[in-house]
Amino acid sequence: MITNVYVDGFNLFYGCLKGTPYKWLDLDALSRRLLPEHEIHRIRYFTAKVSSRPDNLDGPNKQHFYLRALATTPHLTIHLGRFQRKKTRMRLAYPPPEGPATVEVIKTEEKGSDVNLATHLVADAFRADCEVAVVISNDADLAEPIRLVCHEVGLSVGVVNPHRAHHQSVDLEAAAPTFFRQIRESVLGACQFPEKLEDSRGEIRRPSTW
Image (cartoon, rainbow, N blue to C red; front, side):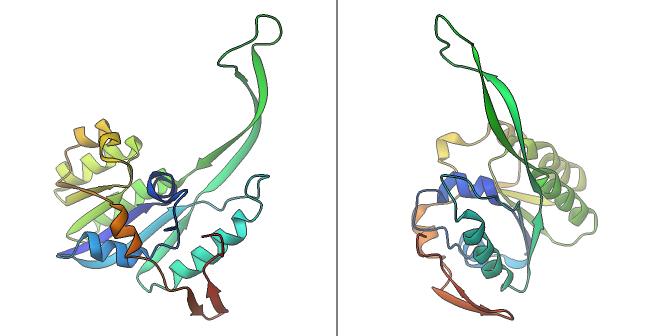
């Protein structure tokens, strides 16, 4: 079965990679391990460029090398959204008896990735670009495009949950995709890039803190 894989980068990261030694993840190897009976035709990876923060000063540099590593996979494309940072006032969970009930914070939001994923999923389905579409995400916002592609277009759609099984989105379940799969830690460990790769710009090394 000719299969396209659509990866929600931040949902994958926060679902099963953050705080683990498995961030140097080879998405092609992961797709083949999760879907051994499928022919992986295309992988689309959706993310946004991160910015430096006090708790993660080297974040942009580490992401840069990871995106370069991903780009060495010939049938993988990277689709970028953007981050929006703004100051806003939010209510305190436990405001003091005296004093303000709100505080000014810097709010960071990723914009565009879920819309980009949904757009390419639907467009590829209408172009008959694959026989099976597999979405790696647990984002409830993707329920409607998954339902449309599966039940209106008639394409087989699988959902791979990167979060713990008991955190499966009820909205994605309600969309009734063709099948569900779960990402397990043993699979992540078996699907890492080599410590060193090369592209046209030179050597790519796994970040030392990963």
